[in-house]
Image (cartoon, rainbow, N blue to C red):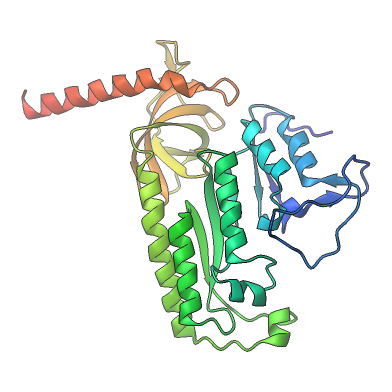
Length: 321
């Protein structure tokens, strides 16, 4: 039994969190299901509650509570997990899909349990099942013996998938790992740094383009509080986990059908007009208060048209027309 009274967002946290299986719990599940084309070095567990069941139960606690999870492994995204994410409005459609490398030979040395082709096939499946899904990832540059050609495969993967968020690192050898026992850290630090910079440039170009596509649309924002960088602004996050900064003193309508307005507080769900973007953040203008359960994006066409009329009116006044 889960109780989260008053909680507006919860994150299921764990290393390979979607590999979760609680064998102390009686369940109808039999064996672990992996995404097609993926394998694991770990022995499959029998019985117990799987991640899909945990996610199902948590998402039922409160339809107005957002649910996220991190950090998953791409092998544990079977169809039943993807279908559940699609069906539940309160499970965020932002999935972390750590790739680490775009080259199959490097992935094999990393013991990741999949090829480049299997990873791309999973990306295609996710996007077919969950339209509009946003993806984030982890990448390592300069793993043991990585050649320039192999690194180019990583850059091309970044180009193909187009992530909203990416965490990019230079490889660092750690003791008591398989790589420490088997391989030599042969890539110079300067080369690793150059490769991280190249990944960053490629990732940010696509992230900037993806975020720019949201300008002029309405997003549902869960308000978190004051912006750390701008004292006169509040901030919140959209479903895709992108931060939105907006004027702190600007109220929002009580509801989409109301003419009354009230101030915005942390924990509020607010429909927000996105007016600007960078590769990492949005700027917005609050429109109206709502809830995650009742939010209806089809209503937003009226607000978009009204906002455009007001914008054109201000432009005419400023130009003296």
